[in-house]
Length: 347
Ligand code: FNR
Image 1 (cartoon, rainbow, N blue to C red):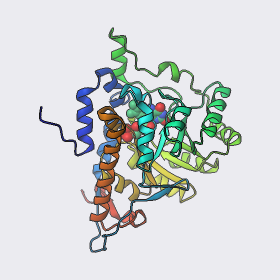
Image 2 (tube, helix red, strand yellow):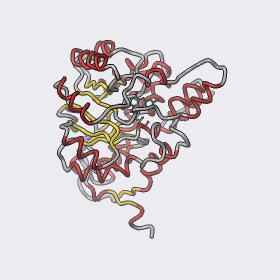
Image 3 (tube, rainbow, N blue to C red):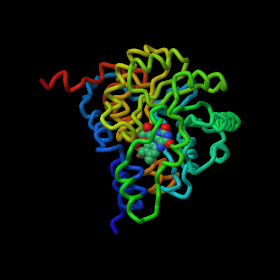
Image 4 (cartoon, rainbow, N blue to C red):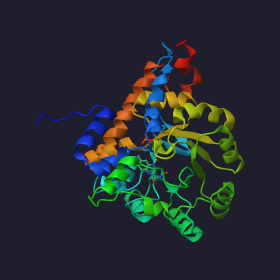
């Protein structure tokens, strides 16, 4: 009866866990295997502590930046997540509209419940990027690239950590029970090509002028290869802990990759962002921008486009406050010295 007041992303998560059907919640929330990486993505942020500057005159602040040369209102983008109509009937259309009205990058998943053309119609002036899985059938892949080009999408985000689908145990259990409600991507993922190599990135580059973002890099040597193959950006990601369990938390993988890349392409990070200080830490460790996946689904489940706008505004408000309290007026003021790893002082 007492109206729930949602004041942080954790509140949205808790609300979603109460209202979503269990099999949908399991699909959205879950990670691979024992979910070590899923947990660690969040825990790792807490091991980086802030070292705020004071007395810097922060009365005029801006979070604005650019991504691939396009202006964005904040260093925050919406990660591609599959099948959003399971959260709300407006699905991806609500997400694309919310991203546009808030001035953020929106990434449409290959595994979506809306088409490329529907997104273009819903947010024609949006900064829409298309997440691509390279299919075994290269003509299917080419067709998707052409449709994204024609729909004025600005970039291709090629996900490289999903040559096979990781095991999500809760979803497997649900499918074994006789509920009959399959939320699995098993069929779609059987179309993905496990024979992919870096040559396929070169192939993709040869068939399109769209900038390419490689999503799912966790090692500096792979980041180096991505730079050599001419990508526009690297997304440090472990797929929200849904693929190879036991990999490093993304915030911990980020610094070595930033160092290796040394400004030769943009570097983004996703995984476990739950509050403004997480974004501040990621930027301090060298990310140009962060992406968020699940919290957007929780906002969508709450109230469609309006719920997503609320989640985005909460994150922006928290980032603005975190910047002010650490002496940063603009994102260029956020430097490496703002964070220290607990390993440096706990022993
Ligand atoms: C994803 N993610 C994902 N990534 C991708 O490249 N294509 C996809 O279709 C999907 N689908 C998907 C579905 C669901 C339900 C989740 C939770 C995630 C991964 C996503 O883009 C991103 O890497 C993570 O979600 C980031 O972690 P957080 O923000 O969810 O902690």
